[in-house]
Image (cartoon, rainbow, N blue to C red; front, side):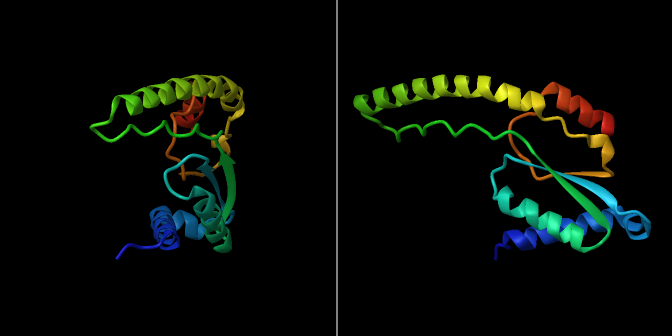
Length: 147
């Protein structure tokens, strides 16, 4: 039987709490957690606030969330094979338009990605609820210096 998203999140939070072990339990100050959210194949819009609520409710964590710029829509789906010539031409045109729109989107989003600079070093824990496009090199550098 498949578990629900809240059950999955609760298990992940329990695992993180147990992993942090004595540090989390004995810390005089709450541990500062940064949750990265913004692109994913699951319902991150629901799971991120739930994770923050569970961590905060424990009294052991201070939670901040940082949202990445949004992702572009998925490309058009290829027609099933065998596809007739008219459908192939339609699909080729859909792909051409998609490429143009994506190029314009990427240009517009470049400023948003340039502005997204989480202060990783201010946090004890960085928790990723993100599974999207690769972060810009500058952000990856900031993150690797945290680690």
